Length: 446
Image (cartoon, rainbow, N blue to C red; front, side, top):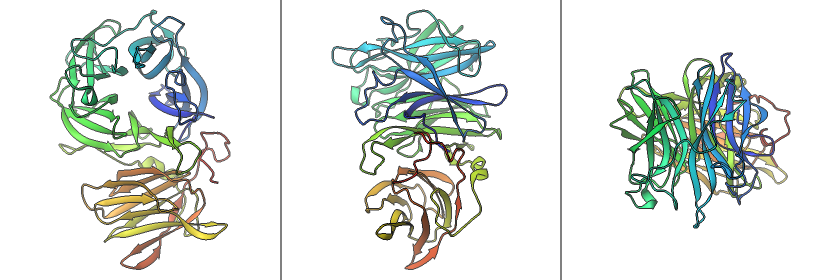
């Protein structure tokens, strides 16, 4: 249902699907710590496999830093593999070291594999494939040149790469942009001025391009300041690009799009964890969350909805307390849904989800506000998912809020509307690996 490698946390990732339908995820990995040093702790890619995008099996490390003196000697960051011939080409971020001011020096490298399962990589040459062009992009201090994503060009027989960069024409605090480059052969690239430069974004990380059924394009980008991701659409890769606003709520980050086993488009993303496994713990690198359906209809803004593929993991409705569950209710006015758990001090609230129309929020067992959002329209239905410490709320089927709550006990659900209390039946979640005892397992509670 979620995934993190044993003893480690997940950061940015890439998704692959092999000929036999097996999925693989390549991901940055690092230890549980609030003091995260991304130069010393993101030095390799983990790999895991799945047949359904829900249950993941760790398969060890698949790629690491380069030899001393090379452009990727210090760290390897976000990657993107694409099919090439009978194997794959992987574009990835290499970090050689720090500037005098302590900023990571970033460039893009290339590796090939004769396989399609995310293993067997060999580097192309000893230097970077692509570097920031100072005519348009900041280099050196406060630079950005990472998170490459490559697709087929829609105007030529070649390729287009987008990169997280820093627009040299803007103040650094709002210089986050998507750079782009073109190539005929994947090895020789021409850099162009920014493809998208909003002018109000600090960092526009992990850009993703997806060609839609009508031939138009969708761009997703993660916004550093808000810790969420937004969407843009365009009739062609060269634009014009129209900003569509947030697609995922704060806390969801670094999205990737892939075809699910049922053929539908889904988005997977990361979500944070907290050091010490407590509501007061510092946030750290996180885990891979379960898929959401990507819905793009006509000229409407894209949105993420509940993916029906998860329904097979839900049990029959029950009124009994459940540790991991999904609950649904209709909303006819202001409502508070309380999950009550038995403790040594008696039955106490473990989690409260409130909605007064457009305002949606979650509070923890001590009444502390854990997360909130403002809906574009008043909600008529809510779906709440709790699995371990992870909480999601869907408003009228749309993914609206995510947070963490470390109450960790089986809970009964009740809703209060207009002073009346009623029990909410829930569907318990069946876990893919209920007996696995490592950091990728669901946190069992205190």
